[in-house]
Length: 269
Image (tube, rainbow, N blue to C red; front, top):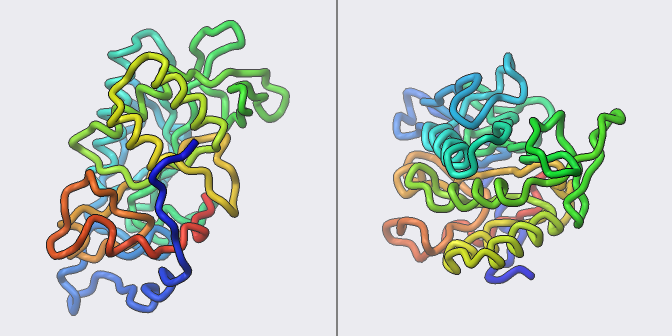
Protein backbone atom coordinates (compact mmCIF):
# COMPACT_ATOMS: atom_id res chain seq x y z
CA UNK A 1 0.00 0.00 0.00
CA UNK A 2 1.22 3.50 -0.83
CA UNK A 3 1.35 6.25 1.75
CA UNK A 4 1.84 9.98 1.42
CA UNK A 5 1.64 10.39 -2.38
CA UNK A 6 0.53 13.78 -3.60
CA UNK A 7 -2.16 14.45 -6.21
CA UNK A 8 -1.33 16.07 -9.55
CA UNK A 9 -3.22 18.28 -11.99
CA UNK A 10 -2.92 19.39 -15.59
CA UNK A 11 -1.69 22.82 -14.57
CA UNK A 12 1.92 21.67 -14.94
CA UNK A 13 1.65 22.13 -18.70
CA UNK A 14 1.41 25.87 -18.19
CA UNK A 15 5.12 25.98 -17.38
CA UNK A 16 6.12 24.62 -20.79
CA UNK A 17 5.65 28.04 -22.34
CA UNK A 18 8.38 29.41 -20.07
CA UNK A 19 10.97 26.90 -21.23
CA UNK A 20 14.27 28.36 -22.38
CA UNK A 21 17.73 27.15 -23.31
CA UNK A 22 21.12 28.50 -22.17
CA UNK A 23 22.29 31.36 -24.38
CA UNK A 24 24.60 34.39 -23.97
CA UNK A 25 21.40 36.34 -23.28
CA UNK A 26 20.42 33.97 -20.49
CA UNK A 27 23.72 33.17 -18.75
CA UNK A 28 21.98 32.09 -15.55
CA UNK A 29 20.62 28.94 -17.21
CA UNK A 30 22.95 26.02 -16.65
CA UNK A 31 23.01 22.45 -15.47
CA UNK A 32 19.67 20.66 -15.92
CA UNK A 33 17.50 23.20 -17.74
CA UNK A 34 13.78 22.77 -18.29
CA UNK A 35 11.59 19.74 -17.64
CA UNK A 36 12.62 16.07 -17.92
CA UNK A 37 10.44 15.70 -21.04
CA UNK A 38 11.20 19.17 -22.44
CA UNK A 39 14.75 20.16 -21.49
CA UNK A 40 18.47 20.32 -22.17
CA UNK A 41 21.60 20.23 -20.02
CA UNK A 42 25.03 21.77 -19.63
CA UNK A 43 27.96 20.60 -17.52
CA UNK A 44 27.08 16.93 -17.98
CA UNK A 45 29.52 14.16 -17.11
CA UNK A 46 29.71 10.73 -18.71
CA UNK A 47 29.15 7.53 -16.76
CA UNK A 48 32.25 5.29 -17.13
CA UNK A 49 31.82 2.06 -19.07
CA UNK A 50 32.17 0.11 -15.83
CA UNK A 51 33.22 0.48 -12.21
CA UNK A 52 32.87 -1.18 -8.80
CA UNK A 53 29.47 -2.86 -8.85
CA UNK A 54 28.12 -1.43 -12.11
CA UNK A 55 28.43 -1.60 -15.89
CA UNK A 56 26.73 0.10 -18.79
CA UNK A 57 24.00 -1.92 -20.48
CA UNK A 58 25.18 -0.56 -23.84
CA UNK A 59 28.93 -0.25 -23.52
CA UNK A 60 29.33 2.07 -26.52
CA UNK A 61 26.10 4.02 -26.21
CA UNK A 62 26.03 7.80 -26.54
CA UNK A 63 23.28 8.39 -23.96
CA UNK A 64 25.33 8.05 -20.78
CA UNK A 65 25.61 11.75 -19.98
CA UNK A 66 23.95 13.17 -16.89
CA UNK A 67 24.21 15.79 -14.20
CA UNK A 68 27.21 15.16 -11.92
CA UNK A 69 25.06 14.42 -8.88
CA UNK A 70 23.13 11.73 -10.75
CA UNK A 71 26.21 10.06 -12.24
CA UNK A 72 28.03 10.15 -8.90
CA UNK A 73 24.96 8.88 -7.08
CA UNK A 74 24.62 5.86 -9.38
CA UNK A 75 28.25 4.90 -8.86
CA UNK A 76 28.10 5.36 -5.09
CA UNK A 77 24.91 3.31 -4.67
CA UNK A 78 26.20 0.51 -6.91
CA UNK A 79 29.43 0.39 -4.92
CA UNK A 80 27.50 0.12 -1.66
CA UNK A 81 25.55 -2.86 -3.00
CA UNK A 82 28.79 -4.39 -4.26
CA UNK A 83 30.37 -4.04 -0.82
CA UNK A 84 27.28 -4.82 1.25
CA UNK A 85 26.31 -7.98 -0.65
CA UNK A 86 29.58 -9.06 -2.31
CA UNK A 87 29.86 -11.66 -5.02
CA UNK A 88 26.84 -10.59 -7.07
CA UNK A 89 26.47 -9.47 -10.66
CA UNK A 90 26.86 -5.73 -11.36
CA UNK A 91 24.08 -3.20 -11.63
CA UNK A 92 23.41 -2.62 -15.35
CA UNK A 93 22.80 1.03 -16.16
CA UNK A 94 20.62 1.95 -19.12
CA UNK A 95 20.20 5.30 -20.86
CA UNK A 96 20.65 8.61 -19.06
CA UNK A 97 20.69 11.53 -21.55
CA UNK A 98 22.61 12.88 -24.52
CA UNK A 99 25.61 15.05 -23.73
CA UNK A 100 23.70 18.29 -24.25
CA UNK A 101 20.28 16.90 -23.49
CA UNK A 102 17.25 17.10 -25.74
CA UNK A 103 15.19 14.33 -27.29
CA UNK A 104 16.73 10.88 -27.60
CA UNK A 105 15.43 7.66 -29.13
CA UNK A 106 13.42 5.17 -27.06
CA UNK A 107 12.37 7.78 -24.48
CA UNK A 108 9.84 10.52 -23.86
CA UNK A 109 11.77 12.00 -20.95
CA UNK A 110 15.56 11.63 -20.34
CA UNK A 111 16.14 15.07 -21.86
CA UNK A 112 17.73 17.07 -19.05
CA UNK A 113 20.27 14.79 -17.36
CA UNK A 114 18.04 13.86 -14.41
CA UNK A 115 16.68 10.46 -15.52
CA UNK A 116 18.26 7.03 -15.79
CA UNK A 117 17.02 3.48 -16.36
CA UNK A 118 18.48 0.83 -14.06
CA UNK A 119 17.99 -2.83 -14.94
CA UNK A 120 16.95 -5.24 -12.20
CA UNK A 121 19.37 -7.21 -10.14
CA UNK A 122 18.34 -10.79 -10.96
CA UNK A 123 19.09 -14.36 -9.95
CA UNK A 124 18.47 -17.77 -11.42
CA UNK A 125 15.39 -19.61 -10.17
CA UNK A 126 17.75 -21.35 -7.73
CA UNK A 127 18.93 -18.03 -6.32
CA UNK A 128 22.37 -17.57 -7.92
CA UNK A 129 23.14 -13.93 -8.78
CA UNK A 130 23.60 -13.47 -12.54
CA UNK A 131 24.04 -10.56 -14.90
CA UNK A 132 20.69 -9.49 -16.30
CA UNK A 133 20.52 -10.51 -19.98
CA UNK A 134 18.15 -7.67 -20.91
CA UNK A 135 15.15 -5.76 -19.57
CA UNK A 136 13.37 -8.65 -17.82
CA UNK A 137 9.68 -8.11 -17.02
CA UNK A 138 8.88 -9.55 -13.60
CA UNK A 139 5.47 -10.28 -12.15
CA UNK A 140 4.11 -9.80 -8.64
CA UNK A 141 5.88 -13.02 -7.64
CA UNK A 142 9.22 -11.55 -8.73
CA UNK A 143 9.70 -14.06 -11.57
CA UNK A 144 10.05 -13.12 -15.22
CA UNK A 145 10.96 -14.59 -18.58
CA UNK A 146 13.59 -12.85 -20.64
CA UNK A 147 12.50 -11.93 -24.20
CA UNK A 148 13.60 -14.27 -26.94
CA UNK A 149 13.37 -17.41 -24.86
CA UNK A 150 16.48 -16.61 -22.84
CA UNK A 151 15.23 -18.29 -19.68
CA UNK A 152 13.50 -17.37 -16.44
CA UNK A 153 14.88 -15.08 -13.77
CA UNK A 154 13.95 -13.88 -10.29
CA UNK A 155 14.20 -10.36 -8.95
CA UNK A 156 17.11 -10.20 -6.51
CA UNK A 157 15.06 -8.46 -3.84
CA UNK A 158 17.82 -8.01 -1.21
CA UNK A 159 20.14 -6.31 -3.70
CA UNK A 160 17.30 -4.28 -5.18
CA UNK A 161 16.34 -2.99 -1.75
CA UNK A 162 19.93 -2.20 -0.81
CA UNK A 163 20.25 -0.18 -4.01
CA UNK A 164 17.09 1.78 -3.23
CA UNK A 165 18.11 2.33 0.38
CA UNK A 166 21.56 3.48 -0.72
CA UNK A 167 20.08 5.96 -3.19
CA UNK A 168 17.68 7.37 -0.62
CA UNK A 169 20.43 7.85 1.96
CA UNK A 170 23.08 9.15 -0.45
CA UNK A 171 24.46 12.69 0.04
CA UNK A 172 25.23 12.72 -3.69
CA UNK A 173 21.71 12.60 -5.06
CA UNK A 174 18.20 13.82 -4.15
CA UNK A 175 15.58 11.34 -5.33
CA UNK A 176 12.35 12.61 -6.86
CA UNK A 177 10.91 9.36 -8.27
CA UNK A 178 11.74 5.68 -8.47
CA UNK A 179 9.24 4.51 -11.08
CA UNK A 180 8.50 0.80 -10.64
CA UNK A 181 5.56 -1.56 -10.97
CA UNK A 182 3.33 -1.97 -7.92
CA UNK A 183 4.31 -5.64 -7.77
CA UNK A 184 8.00 -4.87 -7.48
CA UNK A 185 7.33 -2.15 -4.91
CA UNK A 186 5.41 -4.62 -2.74
CA UNK A 187 8.21 -7.20 -2.88
CA UNK A 188 10.87 -4.66 -1.97
CA UNK A 189 8.92 -2.95 0.82
CA UNK A 190 7.85 -6.28 2.34
CA UNK A 191 11.50 -7.35 2.40
CA UNK A 192 12.61 -4.09 4.02
CA UNK A 193 9.95 -4.38 6.72
CA UNK A 194 10.69 -8.05 7.37
CA UNK A 195 14.35 -7.31 8.06
CA UNK A 196 13.51 -4.41 10.35
CA UNK A 197 15.03 -1.60 8.32
CA UNK A 198 14.82 2.07 9.30
CA UNK A 199 11.12 3.06 9.19
CA UNK A 200 12.04 6.55 7.94
CA UNK A 201 13.88 5.14 4.92
CA UNK A 202 11.03 2.72 4.22
CA UNK A 203 8.52 5.59 4.41
CA UNK A 204 10.56 7.62 1.94
CA UNK A 205 10.77 4.61 -0.38
CA UNK A 206 6.99 4.20 -0.24
CA UNK A 207 6.60 7.82 -1.29
CA UNK A 208 9.07 7.90 -4.17
CA UNK A 209 8.26 4.46 -5.62
CA UNK A 210 5.41 4.78 -8.09
CA UNK A 211 3.81 2.85 -10.94
CA UNK A 212 2.81 5.39 -13.62
CA UNK A 213 -0.94 5.46 -14.17
CA UNK A 214 -1.12 5.79 -17.96
CA UNK A 215 2.12 4.36 -19.33
CA UNK A 216 4.26 1.24 -19.18
CA UNK A 217 4.17 -0.25 -15.67
CA UNK A 218 7.98 -0.26 -15.29
CA UNK A 219 8.06 -3.94 -14.46
CA UNK A 220 11.30 -4.45 -16.43
CA UNK A 221 13.48 -1.70 -14.92
CA UNK A 222 13.74 1.00 -12.29
CA UNK A 223 13.43 4.54 -13.64
CA UNK A 224 15.29 6.92 -11.35
CA UNK A 225 14.74 10.67 -11.48
CA UNK A 226 16.55 13.17 -9.33
CA UNK A 227 14.93 16.35 -8.03
CA UNK A 228 15.94 19.90 -8.84
CA UNK A 229 18.18 21.00 -5.99
CA UNK A 230 17.62 24.50 -4.55
CA UNK A 231 20.68 25.70 -6.49
CA UNK A 232 19.57 24.02 -9.73
CA UNK A 233 16.07 25.47 -9.45
CA UNK A 234 17.31 29.03 -9.74
CA UNK A 235 19.45 28.05 -12.76
CA UNK A 236 16.60 26.68 -14.86
CA UNK A 237 15.77 23.21 -13.52
CA UNK A 238 12.03 22.57 -13.48
CA UNK A 239 9.37 20.02 -12.60
CA UNK A 240 9.20 16.30 -12.99
CA UNK A 241 7.33 15.65 -9.76
CA UNK A 242 7.04 16.85 -6.16
CA UNK A 243 9.82 18.26 -4.06
CA UNK A 244 9.72 16.05 -0.98
CA UNK A 245 9.76 17.62 2.46
CA UNK A 246 12.87 15.70 3.57
CA UNK A 247 14.97 17.33 0.82
CA UNK A 248 16.86 20.61 1.42
CA UNK A 249 14.38 23.49 1.63
CA UNK A 250 14.08 25.84 -1.32
CA UNK A 251 14.35 29.50 -0.35
CA UNK A 252 10.96 31.16 -0.11
CA UNK A 253 8.98 28.01 -0.84
CA UNK A 254 7.18 25.39 1.16
CA UNK A 255 8.22 21.77 0.71
CA UNK A 256 5.98 21.16 -2.33
CA UNK A 257 4.64 24.49 -3.55
CA UNK A 258 6.63 24.66 -6.78
CA UNK A 259 6.11 21.22 -8.27
CA UNK A 260 3.07 19.65 -6.64
CA UNK A 261 0.67 20.65 -9.45
CA UNK A 262 2.55 18.86 -12.21
CA UNK A 263 0.74 16.16 -14.13
CA UNK A 264 2.66 12.91 -13.70
CA UNK A 265 0.88 11.44 -16.72
CA UNK A 266 3.46 13.19 -18.94
CA UNK A 267 5.93 10.48 -17.92
CA UNK A 268 6.32 7.69 -20.45
CA UNK A 269 9.71 5.94 -20.04
